[in-house]
Image (cartoon, rainbow, N blue to C red; front, side, top):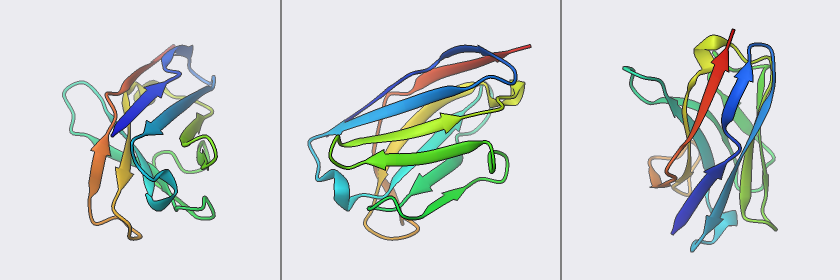
Length: 120
């Protein structure tokens, strides 16, 4: 199983980025997909997740209204649209494939992460 994130980079505060996570080696449509992030010196934290069909999403309070998780099961890809970025959004962002429950009891597979840096 491979999860490969892309789309990270440097952006000014108030700007937008769209992260992608391409999955292979698993039946993508059976997995809840989640996004997490880890800032320097901090623990990894939950950002958002999406159901198997993409009909339901759930977000951390810190990103609600600014970030949107979506997925394209035909492309085995999950996305994280990030708008109105803040300095505190700077982190390495990871996608993960969760167990087949909502919310997932665990996340079975993880990507390698992509760096997002927000500058003032």
